[in-house]
Length: 310
Image (cartoon, rainbow, N blue to C red):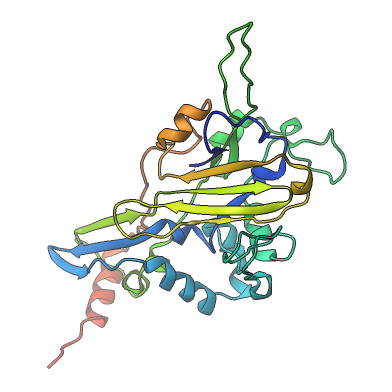
C-alpha cells in the first residue's frame, strides 16, 4: 500500500488532480521491499540474515534479465532505468534537490514504464480524449477484485470553514500494489532447488516499510527526507522529480509511505486525510508449484538423482 498526502493536515494545496499522483514508483522492482531474509530447512539454517539484499538482487536482475524475458517484468514491477537520466548537482533545480540524485520520468524510460504498471480508473484510455476514462470499461470495485495494481483511493482536500465548522482535510492518493516477488529472485538457493518432497521450510522476511517527504516550490524541489524502520533498511520508493504539470503546481511538501498491508500506519498521514482500506490482502501469500508424479516415474527420478560424495 503506497499512500501519498501532503506532509501535515494544514496543507490542502496539493490537489489530486495535479501530477503528484505520478510522483513515486518502486525502485527497479518489487524486490526493493525486502531488506533481508532468513531461511531454515528441516531445522538447519540455510540462509542467514544479511541486510540490504535488495541492492544485490537488483544487480542480479540487471545482469540476468533480457528482452526475451520482458513478459514477466510487469509482474515483478521491473524495468531497467536509463543511466543517462540520473543527474547530480549541488544546487536545487526542477529535477532534484541539491546534492540529491535525480530521477526524471521525461528522460528515464524505466521510471515511466514502472509508473504505467499502476492503473488509474479515471485515466484516459484514448490519448487526448477526456471522456475515455477507464471507469467506462471497468469500475474501481471490480478492479480491486483483479490481480492488478491500481489507484484505490483518490480524495480531494477540504479547507477549514469557520461558518460550517468544516475540518481541514488533506487530499489523499493511495495505490494498491499487487506485488509479486519470485523466490528465485530473492536468493539463488531457490533457483537451484530440485523437485523435492517432505521438506519443512521456515522463511522470515524483513520488509522495507518506509516513509519519505519531498518539498516542491516554483518548479523546484527544495528538500527530501526518508524514515526507515528500526533496522538499517533502504527506501523502496523512487521520487519522480519532474513531470509535465509541476510548473503550475502550488508549493507544498509531499509525504509518501509504503507498507506491506492494506492499511497505512503512518501517524502523520492518518491524521492528515481520510485514508481507506486498499484492495490488497492483509497477509502475504506464498505460492509454491506442486508436481504430482506417477509412482514409477517418481522412483526413476529419485534413483537417477542420487549421488554419492566421498
